[in-house]
Structure formats: structure tokens, C-alpha cells
Amino acid sequence: MTGEINPADQWRTRKWEVPRDVIGAWIAESDFGTAPEITAALHEAVDAGFLTYLPDHAGAAAEDACSRFLQLRYGWAVPTERVHLVSDVVAALRITLEHFVPDGAVVVPTPCYPPFLTTPGRVGREVVTVPSASVDGRWSIDLEALDAAFAAGGRLLLLCNPHNPLGQVMTPEEQRAVAAVVERHGARVFSDEIHAPVVYPGARHHPYAALSPETAAHTVTATATSKGWNIPGLKSAQLILTSDVDQRRWIERDIVPRLEGSILGAVAARVAYNSSVDWLDDTIAMFDANRHLLGRLLAEHAPTVRYVVPEATYLAWLDFRACGLDVDPAEFLRVHAGVMASSGRDTGPGGEGHVRFNFAMPPELLERSVRAVGAALAGAAAGRAAGVRGAVA
Image (cartoon, rainbow, N blue to C red):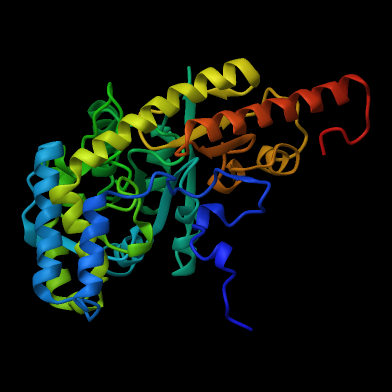
């Protein structure tokens, strides 16, 4: 019957909507579930029939929990009234474009989160890309090109920190260098910090808006529980307004009425921030082990793939440019290795020849993935050596 779901597919996540013989390593979801405290709270809410429009008290509780988490985790004091629930980071960006920076070009350093390249155009805005430079495996924003983009009419910089797909965490020095260019042109920053909960030992997340009164005044920040606690489908991100002008505008225009929020998302966000930080840290430890395991596996099975161990996120930025492929490596992996990763081409200039690989999976599945990648690359190399036409494609 039309509309029925195969029972075997009923609880397959988006990440695993791939052919049965393909390993899903593409979309930013984790295979490790979510915190039991969140699961219990959601069951309790459903059992209580808490499925209405979002009441003020539930929204306020989630916003207060976010505010306290920001203080405890990063030392960033954000008043609760400056935290606002929105559905996700793309919604936060659209709100910023419509209400806080309503004109001018949007400046996007690349490689980047793909919706940064497409969302501005959907609301009639020009996108100016600023390709980043990689030196010894560390990427940085080209400050001269950034300066030129603002001089040519750019008004809003889209900043992603921790970075998706690069897995880097900006240092305060790197952030201050960017801020100086932004201030010189009187521009604004949209700071996507939804991956901030997943940062590994040796790195530390510094919220961009917390750097100085100037960055607070020119920044709109988006954060969320979606990545750290693996609940993106609950649609409860947080928009943080550190600009007094933006905050007044939010109130005057009632930009996102609270009743439009996700009631179960608010429940989950409150519990994540208040009661599930230990689970988060335990999960980060599993990701941490996997990021190093991935390095060892690549060195053994696919040594021509360049990999810099990420400082944050469970996303690896893999460089296939030395592998001799004449096709997009993401397509090569899908066809020849049975591994579905995200194409670097979608991340803009500088992403060519790369893939974003999600390593938030059980270690044995990670090993199987890398072995398959290594075997596919070895087969392609042997085919080239033998002069077999079409050995790669």
C-alpha cells in the first residue's frame, strides 16, 4: 500500500539511507545514539501528551540551559534573554540575512559547509567566495582576499568554527585577525558554532563573539545540541544575539514567535545542556579514539590519502589529490569501495579532490571502510599500471 514503510527500514537514519552494501559516512550524524537522559525525557514528554505548541516555560528553560552551558563550558556569559530558539543553523542564517544584515554580498571562505554557498542566493543575495590557504595541513582565511571582498561590497562574513568540513578550531589570534578586517569595513559576522561541543584534548573553542566588545556588537552566533548530542531531527538550535541593536530588532519584530519552536526539541536541549554533559564527554572520547584509529588505518591501507587529524567534529577532511584519480573521489569511493562520503566539490573552491568522511561509527566498521578504500585505490593503481582503460572511472 502506498505510504507504508518496510519494517526493516522503519528506523534507518538518514545516514544509512544508502544501498545495503554501502557504508554511510556522509551526513553529519553519529552512529552512537543520544544520551539516555534525553531519551527518557522525550519518552516522558510523549507519555504526558506534551506535543502541543511550545509553551513559554519550556522554551525559556531550554534557553536558560544553553546560557548556563555556555558559561560553564567556555566561560562565555550570555544572558538568557539573548538566547533564542530557532530550528537549525540554516534557519538562523536566513533570519540574519533577512533581519540583521538585509543587504550587501555574503562573503564565504571556502571550503565551507555547502548550504553557506546556496542559502544566500535563495534570498536574493550575492555570494563572494574567498578560498582559504593550506600550509602544512592547517587552513587559514586569506585576509587580503577577505579585505578585498569587503571593499567590493561584502557585508556579512560566514564563519564556521569549529570548522565543517576541515575539523579545525580557530585560535584567538586567528579570530582577532579576522575581526580586525571586519571592523575596518564595518561589516558583520554570522558565526556557526554548532560543532563547538565536540572539541578534542589539545584544542579549545573560543566563541567569536566573546573576544571583545567589538566582536560582540558585529556578530550573530548560532549553536545547537544537534551534533554533540546527535539530535538534529528535533530542530532546536539557538541563535545568540550579542548586539543590542539586533536584540531590540528581535523583540520589536517578534522574529520567531516562541510557539513556532519545537516542543520536543526544547525538552531535549534543556536536558542535554543541564544533565547530559558527562555523556557528551564520554562520546567525545569515543570520537577521539576513532580520529586516531582513522589515521593509523589510512597509513596502513591507503597511504596516498592525506589526512590531518581534526581538532574538533567527527568529520575527517581527506585529500585524494595524490591518488591518481581522474574522477571525483566521493564518486570513486561509492562505486569502487562501497563507501558513501561527501564530495569536496560541494564545499566550493579548494574542495576539489577531497571528501568529507564521517568517522562517528563503530571501530570495526571504520576499519572495514578504510580497508575497502585502500583496496579500491590499489585496484585503480594496478589498473593504471597495466594500462587498463577505465580502471578508475
